[in-house]
Amino acid sequence: MAIPVIDFSKLDNGESRAETLAQIANGCEEWGFFQLVNHGISDELLERVKRVCEECFKMEREENFKNSTAMNLLKELAQKNNGEKLEDADWEDVFTLMDGVEWPSNTPGFKETMGEYRSELKKLAEKMMEVMDENLGLPKGNIKRAFNCGEGGNEAFFGTKVSHYPPCPHPELVNGLRAHTDAGGVILLFQDDNVGGLQILKDGQWIDVQPIPNAIVINTGDQIEVLSNGRYKSVWHRVLVGTSGNRRSIASFYNPSLKATIAPAPELLLEKTDQELDQIYPKFVFGDYMSVYAQQKFLPKEPRFQAVVRAV
Image 1 (tube, rainbow, N blue to C red):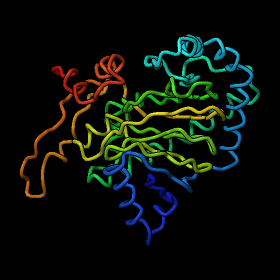
Image 2 (image 1 turned 90 degrees about the horizontal axis):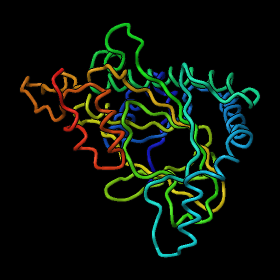
Image 3 (image 1 turned 30 degrees about the vertical axis):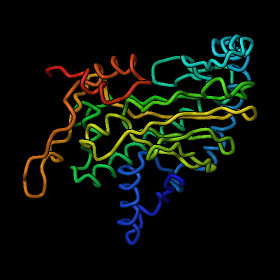
């Protein structure tokens, strides 16, 4: 079983548009994860992204990881050899790029390349949200407006998490990244060409997200699940590590503003007969949800939705 792979360029082909929309709808409704090829981001840019991120890890991150908490805790567990696993840490080197914060500065071309990449990914995220609007029968721009606190707003958060999962001497004792769902909206992942490890939970089984060079993996976060009133699901996923290969993972998140009010779209609470459907999810402020998520990221997601309810 493999997650869907969708040729995004066919969305602009009149003859193939309906089929492509249906494929994306299936990816959102049945999988929560799918891969885009021919997505409009040039191979030339993606190759530069690979190069500067690899160089950044080697020049600015690798030595610190060798003395990280995860490394030291794993050494202690390996020495004890008592069957325990490292449950409260991940085998991951990670930093986040966002506007208004300092970026790594010692890697030639890193800022310029990643700035260009983030700009292209944000456009792709907004195009994907418009496709979701269309498939859900919502007005064009509905999800974007919800995330940006209204028409013309520019308050949504767009961040890029640059991760590496180095070779691990004891992969049986630690996860690369513990199982979780993503808190936010639309996630766009540029993963390693060769080194696997990402898995999603589908029908009770862990399924590999197969590496495809220069594909962009899309997954839906908790807020898309709420806005769609459960039509689209955020999906549990994890990263396993191995003894060889340094897996690169660059995940960009298009999330609501912390001030945004999130609730099921009213249009999705009516059937074609105008009979009201149950509102499965509450209304809440995204910043309040993030406060809960920070404490419960690796716990079942359903209680998070209820814990965050307040009058807005």
